Every structure is written in C-alpha cells, then in structure tokens.
Length: 188
Image (cartoon, rainbow, N blue to C red; front, side, top):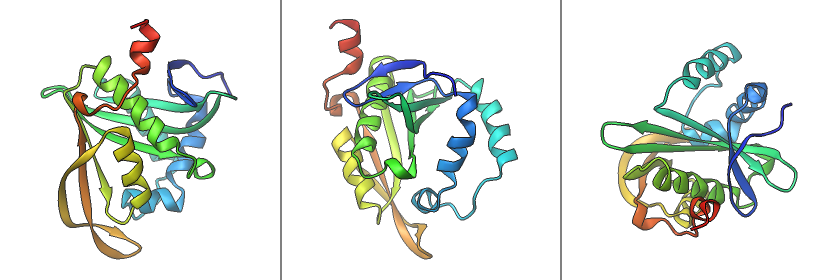
C-alpha cells in the first residue's frame, strides 16, 4: 500500500487523495451490511462494477473523492465524496467509514474537513446530503459538522425492510463551525 498524499489535516484525521491500490478496501467498506443499510441500497456492488466506476470517476471533476486518514498512524478509515453541480456551485456530500472505525467520532471530523474544503477552497455555496431518519448517529454527526435540517422525502427509503423518510440536510459557509483547517494551513 502506498503512503497517503495528505491534502488537508485536522485534529485526528486528514483528507488525502484516493489511491488506486486502496480500491479493494474501499469496495469492502461500501459492501458492508451496515453501509448498505445506511445508504438505503439493497444489493452489494460487484468488484467489476466498482473498479470500472473508479476509472470513470477519476477524471470527472464533478465527482471529488477524498480518502479519510487517521493522522497518528496514516491508516485509512473512510472516504468522503462531493458530487458537485458546477452550474449552481453546490454539492451532495457522501461519507463511508470503515466498519471497524465507526463510533469513534470520525464522521463528524471527516464531514467538517470536507465542508472546510468545499467552502474555503472549492468555493461552493451549499453542500447537502440525504440521510435515512432512523440513522440517528449519522444525523448527530452531520449536525456537529455544520449541517442543518432542510427537508424530508416521505417514505422514500428503506430501513430493515420498512419504508422510512429520508431527511435532507444542508450546510452553507455561514454554518461552518470552524476552526478552519484550510485557513490554518494557509497561515490565516
């Protein structure tokens, strides 16, 4: 495994460039039953589909991926993604954490670092996400990172076989809780 190329460091975590040699681990995280449940998916994704998708996404400026790395030992613990709408300068936020790294507060810091990048480097006006209503831990992590309730899609998702609402959350630059790792890196 190659060393991570760190882009932005926080307190415990950093955003790094995604690495092709990590693709099997990303695939494993994405196909964990809890990840599938949290995304509201129904099926695991084949290796061939994931590998082909990685190649398409690498050159797509509207699909910005970050590997989330624990700073004390450079261990990859997850990924965040910004699916950018360049016409209106907004993005959908997605996060996946390694199953063994969940419950450690990493989702909040990973989301905060990604928002910091989105607002202070990518100059996005708004970042939004969808989360299934029963995912209380995810909702709390997103709120701590600066996301606010923005709406509800009634009965649009499934949780353990039951229809549930998807909550929409968004964040504006004014919602960013700081401190900014970008400003700190630049000496501001």
